[in-house]
Structures are given as C-alpha cells and as structure tokens.
Amino acid sequence: MQLLRALTCVAFVLTIGFAVLAVAPAHSLAHPPNETAHGVDAETFATLWSGDIDRTNATHNHTGTDESAIETLAAQTDIPFNEPPAAVEQWNRRDVREFPAGDGQSAIHPPGAELTHGRTIVDAGTSIFAVHPSTRAHLSPEENPHYVAPEGTILTTTDYRIRTPRGEHTTDRRVSWQLLEHGYNVTDVRIDGTRTGIHDAGRIQTLPYSLAGYPGDEHTLTVATSVNVTFRKHVEWCRSYDNSSDCTEWANTTTYPTENLTVKDSIDVVEYSLEVVGQYARYPDGDLGLVAYKRDPWLGYSLPGVQVNGVWRFYSARDERWDRLVRHAADGTETMHSPVHPLEVHAYPAVTESTVSPRSTMTILDASGGSMDAPSLPENVNVDVLEAPYTATYRLATRVSTTASYTDVTGHGLVRGETATLEPDRFSETPLRRSELSLAIENTTNGSVTVRARLRDAETGEPIHTAERDGVLIIDGHRVDTGPNGSARVTVSQSSGAFTDRFEPGAWWLSHPGYVGDSDSAVVGGTALSLGAAASQLLVPVSLFLVAVFLVDRITGWHVWPPWRGL
Image (cartoon, rainbow, N blue to C red):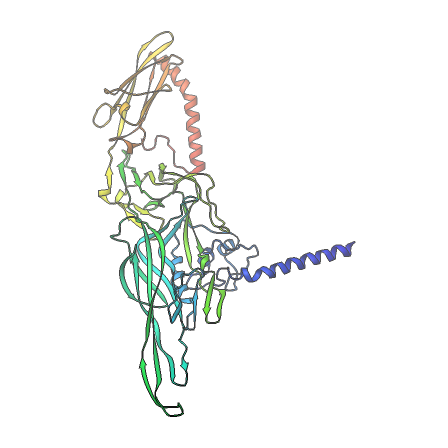
C-alpha cells in the first residue's frame, strides 16, 4: 500500500511538471523584465510592475544581492503610489531604444499593428509606444479615459521590409534591379486630423505635441511616417538580329524607380488640464478656509507642510500589447518574446473618503462629487480598489491652521506634472464672521416655558435671518429659524430649570457672509438657588463630555482639544 501511494505521488508530480512545461513557452512570452535597467534604482524598479505574477520565495533581487524590504514586498504583492510615479517616463524613454532594429529584409511590429503594403515596400507600420505624461483613469466599469497633459511627447516605433522586384532574362530582353537606398523620410503629428508639424523620421522617435487651440477635451493623436525606397533598374533589349535570330546589337536604358509609402497609428486621449476654482475665507481665529472645485477627478491640493488627497491612488503596469513582437519576412512570420516593455500609469479609487496629513493642522469640512460605480481592475493587479459605489471628489473643503494665503496652495492632478496654483481671479473671498447669540426666558407657566433667542452679526450688529440662509438654531433640542429681525420664540415643556441654545451656521461657502457658530444658556427664575441647581444638573454631563473629548484627542491625535478651538 505504501508503495502504491508513493507511485501515485510520483505520477502526480510528473503530471504537474509536464503541465508546467507545456505552458511555460506561452507564459515566457508575457513576463516583465528580469533585471533593473534604464537608470531606475532597484527599489523603484520593483514597484513598477503591478499585474505581474507575484511570488512568495523572494530573497534576492535582480542584481543577485539580498532584497530590500520594498523589493520583497513588491515581489509578493503590488504597491500603490500616492502620486503618478516619474520613473515610468524615464523607463519608457530608454526602453524604446531596445526595440529590435530592422534590416530591410524583415519587419518587426507588435501584434495587431496596422500594416501597409506597397509594390516594393511591404509590412510597413508605425506604432505608438507611449504618450507622456499620461494616466489611464479607472473611474467606473465603463469609463476608463486616457488622460494626457496639454503638452507632451509621443514615443513611436516604425519598421518595414523591402521586396526587390524580380529580374528578367530572355533571348531578347534582360532586366535587372538593384536596391540603392531606403529609409525614413518625414513624420508628422496630427491632432484630430490636422497636421501640426513635420519632423525628420526615424525607426524610433520622440515627437512633441500640443493640444492648445484645439476645441474640446477628447482628441485623437496620430503619427504618420513616410518610408521611401530607390532602385536602379537596368533594361537591355535586342535592337537587331542576324539571319540565325541571334542578337547582334543591344540597346539599354537605366532608370531609378522610387516608392514612397506613408504609415500611421492613432490613439484616443482626453486632455487633462488642471484648472481649479473656488472660495476662500479667513476664520476669526486666523485659520484658512478653502473650497476648491475641479470638474474632472483630481488628486487634491497642498499648502506648505499640509496635504489633502481625494480617493485616488496610482499603480504602474506594463502595456501587455507589447509582450510579444511579430517578425515578418519573405518566408513567413514568427512570434517572439519582446525585449521592450512600455509602462503605463493607472489611477483608481482606493479609499472611501479624502485624507489629510497631518491631521493636527487640517480638517476636511466637505468632500463631494458625483456618485460612481466602482471599477474593476485588470487581472493580476493586486491593489485594494473600492468595490462599492464611491463619491468622486470634485470638491474639497478644508480648514487649515496656517498663516499662509490661498495663493500658497498648489493643486495636484491625476497626470504627472499637472499642478496649478490658485489664481486670484478664479477664487472669490467669502467674509467669515463671528455670530452673537443671546437667550432669554420670556414667560413661564406651571408646565411650559417661552424662550426667546436673538442672533446677530458680532461685527456689524445686523440681525441674522436663518430662514433665508444655510444654518439653524437649536433651542432645547428644537430646530427653529430666526425671522428678519434675527429673533425666534419657542415654547417648550419645563423639564428643567436651564435651557441651552446654539447656532449651527452650516457651510460658510454656501452663504454670504459666512458665520462661525455661537451658543448661550438661560435659567428659569435666574435666582442663585435655581442657578446652582441648573449648574449641578449640567455639571455631570458636561464633565463627562469634556473628559471623553480629551481622551479621544490624546488617543487619535485629531487635535480637537479644546472643543471650543477656532470659535
């Protein structure tokens, strides 16, 4: 029985081994680079390959030395970024140079490349390798725009092969062909079909583009490259014959036929321009209030030493369309592993709410936008993407303990390098003032009390009419509005001798001017005895509340103590 079990185990292992060998050739055509290169340090290199197959036996890096903690982690999972990684562009600019050189006898392209065939130039095509800077944003299952900066570069590869015409040789006519020269002529970049400029062409190119002046956000970038070839064609024919029909005199002519072929590739993109508008205010205690809006998803903004981010995070992964290359030759085609692996930056919603750093100096007042269904990420990308619908943070409102101005704020986009300072003509100031609330007892009966509240602007003395603005009074738990004269009356049951009133002003950016809240209290009768009784009734709950706030502040570091901070 033990022998049978052993033989069964051996058979199972052999079966698995053959299965691995059977799939190994296919898988070997689709793996990321196995060595650090192109000036990217080992730790950064390890974090760039989300979507690859993770391993659990990581002990050495690609240089053969012991792995760092980051390298070990990146080998076992995928590591997100808080901002678009700059190393992606550095990698691609150098990696495209590794594209195999054509020799005119064969042409190399990624699978699916649109190829053009002429009479003597065949299997010709150009392919867009990458666009920089750019980010593929996973907004929802249906929306995955390819955001690009208003100005950037396009990396391309182009190749072709030459089919030399066959010669002729008969008794009275001889034709021979000689390839004299071939190469790339010119390249032009087109935006939405309009040519923007002509450049010297080459097998590998870095081409500038600019979307300035083109209406709309959605565009098509096209690269068109012309390829030319020149031959020497020598033709001889018999001019006269003898009686035996043998040629006695030959004539000849030499011409130089040429062919020019244009090949092109296009990519659909969405222009990403970070233009931020909004409002700002200065709190009475000196804090800065800021509300910033962006109609497209954006990362957030920062002040010196302070950062607020929305729900977005980033990862880098190779463009799998370049995992293989196809070689075209006169005797057929073959598929081979690609030595080039262009990288792309991806943005995805990773957290349910905006985050600030440090929490002790910044508070998020509001983070709002459109509701979106969570996207699904490509297979093997191992990052924590949201699974439930989320709110895209198009508007961020914060309160910051700083003496800096709103002009010191820098907005950050989803595309690398797309930042924006807050321009004065795009931000309006909202006055933010103190409110002054007073509470008085007007009438008492055996079972009820009539309470009157008066709400004023502490700076101007003008009444605050809450019925016409965002904000509300809460008197002894009852929500009431003040009238045009800033006062409100409410009759409540006389359950205690003391009453409290507070003004909750709502969002300052929704009204003009904005206010900070205030509170007041009143005691029925106003005697020392009643005041002491009311104080004793309030002492216990207030003390418990203050102790709770103090403990939460010390445990979390939220900087909420004292609770009257900023009023």
